[in-house]
Structures are given as C-alpha cells and as structure tokens.
Image (tube, rainbow, N blue to C red; front, top):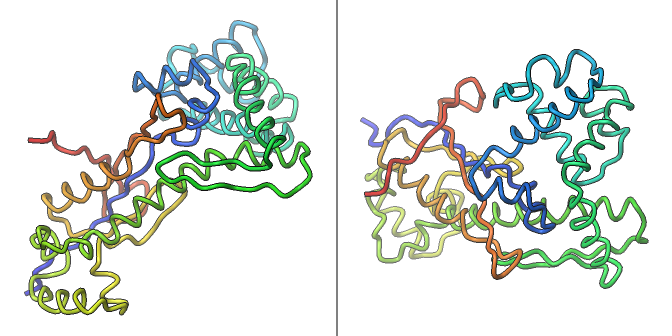
Length: 303
C-alpha cells in the first residue's frame, strides 16, 4: 500500500502584485493607502471609474460600467476585470490602440477609460513615469529593490517605446525576482535541512520507504532527476506571479507548505528602505489546474 496520499494542486498567488509595486514606487497615494488597508484596489477603482462615467452620462458599449449603480459592482463583475486591464495599460502606457484591443472596445472608448484612470491617479504620470524616465536618462539602468537586487540595462535609444518597456519592466522584474527567490528556497528546503527536522514532511510527501535512499542521494550531492525532485516541494508550474505545487492531500503537510511559501514569499521589498512593501500571497487548492476546480485555501490561525 502506498504511504503517500493522493495528490492535489496548491496554487500560491501574489495579490495584485505589479500594480502594488507601482503604487509604492510612484508613489501613488490613493492606491498605496488602499493596499495598506487591505482593500480590493481593482474593485475600488472599478467603482470610481463607473461613478465618473455615470455622473457624466457617458454612453458606453454594452452598458459597460453603467449597467448598475457604481456602488454595487462586486469582485466577480466583468467591469473589475476590465479595470485590471485599464490599470496595467495605464501604468505601462501601452497606447490607446492596444488598450482598445485588450478591452475589445472602440478606440474612442479606450481613450476615455484610460483618461479617467489618469485623472483619478495623476501620480502615475507625474511620479512613476517621471521617475522611470529620469532614471533612464541618467544611467540607462533600473535597479530592482532588495531582497533580490539586480539591474536591468536599457541599451536602446531613449524614446517612447523604450520608456514603455521600462514602465513594465520595473514591476514585472521585481515580482518575478521575488517569485524566483521563493521557488528556489522551497524547491531546496529538504536538501538544506541538514538536521533532518523536516523528516516527517519529507516522508509524507515522498514516502517513508524512500527516506534512506533520499539521505544517500542528498549526502552524495547527487544531481539525478530523482534527487532534484526530492530536494524540496514538487513545484510543477510557475505562471506570471504564481506557483503550482503538486502535493499529497494531507492537511498538515498542505498547511506546512503553504505557511513556508507565504513566509518566504512575503519577505519585505525595500522599494523605499524606510517604507518596506509586502505583497500578500493568496492560495487556491483543488484536484486540477482548472479554475472551476480550485477553491480558496485559508491558512489556519497559527497556534
């Protein structure tokens, strides 16, 4: 009889990560305050955009942002998803034509929506975009913040296209670096457990019958595929700002893995050394990758 429980998928996902980086780096006070208060920033922005549209009686295709009172929009509404695209399109200034394509609305409508977003958050342009441009003009280089500090050099001529690349590169690279850091730590957690304090977790994951073989592989610094797999969590995917972990459906093991990932991934990011930013991690769990099969997973309160 197998000593390992059937597998499920555990997906840790950074919460509204890239726009959070922009809010701190700008800074963009309204967005930053909402993040600090734990509010749903994209939903708040949805309501504000809808309020402007409704109060100014702007005609929108398919009643977008106007099909109900601006205060009644909720997380699952299409308008919130559209707002996420408006936020990223505005933050990265991808251009009205591309925003229209992404939103699947006429160009004139896209222009109105992005204009509203900039009016509500003028610091995107006056703070964040200006900081990016001035930094590139001075050094052609963006340094990503600690704890994963590295530089990205822009060799191209400094024009609007280069600046757009930089607007996106800073938050994307910052979040990507944090995810890669977390992946590396969690994928090697058993390899680095020289005192064998995590033996119970390892055996629950890979089978107690394999423990002696694992010790031999580890102590011999084996680079075999089996030894690499056994070195840490069985991470099968990393998508954008999320990981995908194949894990035995054993509650204490799931809690341990989620808690370790959260502790590692929520390391403060020092965009400003005296004002660290933490990107919260949310979890979903289920039998497959399908969104329909995944349910929210909440960590139990720590004892």
